Length: 259
Image (tube, rainbow, N blue to C red; front, side):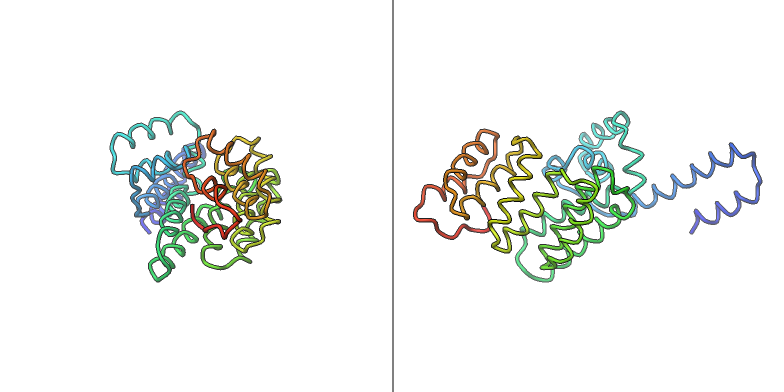
């Protein structure tokens, strides 16, 4: 690798220690920049804007929208996230998170399986490099667990969540992931507990969590809680009407898996 050749030559120069450190830092940054360029991924404008703020900065070099790239590169210079993004190759995880949503829209088959494998590989690239105490690690663990769940590897999903929960016991994303897995397994009572905890940790202000809490309450037969959550989710701006539609139908029927 050209970077290693340069590093070998640099060591032979025996430069003063301060200059040596600076040059080593430059060479390491160059190596990381090549890694970033090697990651071939292009988000749509909608996918880009739906990403978290830190992911928008991480993907600023990947969007073909020059206006978005300019805005979020400038934000990146002010936010203080740049160092972390480069240390963990954050664009890998952020691309993986988008690929997970793409995979969910695909029918079962090779294309979907391949995309989910990419999600796991991309996310693990960043997740293996980040300190697990960092709150961004919890987001990565959520994506990784959901990818495993989509692949039918529930044990692996649970293993990821149980490990990260040691560092972030009050993180709503982790509890939400548990809830989604239990819901998919038709274990509604356990899912209800997890969504209730996620709702508590997010202070009842996350529309998606409120919606899933209501949907699970409906499946558990708790129509009063389901009604409350449907109203609250709508007030918080959750756009999907599935829960209200279900509540308008009686008796309780099988809720569809996608709303």
